[in-house]
Image (tube, one colour):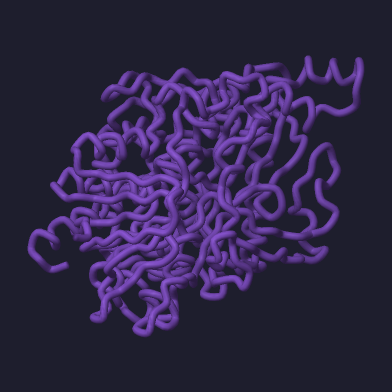
Length: 550
């Protein structure tokens, strides 16, 4: 007899791992399929090696699953391209999409910098308030209790007196102290009337639920060796396993979802180390991220769904949002050990306030950090930043290594139907069509990046630091906050899922990842919102399963 799970979850990141936690705690028998491996922090993370910043890690282990074409921006926007030491890093004004994520138990939370932000209230009403993008079918108040639960599970640390966020109680953990670079930049921000506030992070400031306090090694993006960071493998998957109701299959790539003759999702066909297998579930939850989720649904064609599963609206893959980002690399007048601390320890939320959103044509958040990721070790700084060779190179290193820091900005990328994910003609090694990412920057996006760089420079000038270069998401930075390809709504014609992540077309098929996001939170990180939505979705699934409605 075939084994039938209460739920099959495809993907183990912020959405999938959280759903596994909530469903197993509710007594459900769950199968979790993950296309990547399970990492052992002590063996697989490279932080004990001298070449830790250049050795192969998460990103380089990802499957080759998507293609995209460059966009030529024209000479008008060449000033926004990345530069260093007064020279452009790229000769052509060309923008190329690059997706940065991790495949493995825990998904991209393995390499995220643990920023956990509640979206501001106005981020859920962008169209009605500012005539931008769309409104969500839920409000901040609907998500507030799940935000609080997510913060408790993740062990979030932060300042609850943030004037740019809704009123709330204290975080589970007090905020982290600002590093030396952020302390200096805070003074410059205050000269401009801006508030630099400790970032809210899923990183404990003291021991929390069996996790140690942070040791400030600044290497969150390479995997947390000591297990303090609130990655999903640690805080969700592990306790879900302890219930005895979770089965995990790693190196298990979902190929397509089968439906029965009545159009209900019935099984997931996946490829593992022993060949192709099929698993059956009463409910199927897709949590592969905003690129892989539409790819799987579009590849799950049948006579009932000739255009792809759950795609009678034609919107699976549509309204994709990447992120707009800019980084200003700066030098202080003396070394401040900027290679220590947290990757991102502070943010400036002034520009995400409602009046700023209208003024800029979108919300944005600024922030400060020490040495940016990829430029932390002496090796990376010497090979990528320090000029010349010999004595002058050595003197440059002595003067500037550890004095380098960054001021950054992240902004809303508004959803447009034409920015989308479709199936490519080219296939991967398993014969599955790759995802083709069709995304173009419009003038309004480019103007926003121009404003972002201007704001960063204003803060740098007020802080008395020297700018030596810029990096922007147009040409030098990968997209980490990709969203919106199966958006949430109440209309079957204008959205893919309902407010609980339930597909309009298939009532036992759910999506729990960034695909369902309607907007991007005015520059905030989406991780906490994904976790909160997944808790809400899984709670609904457990209730409906017990009622016999699924």
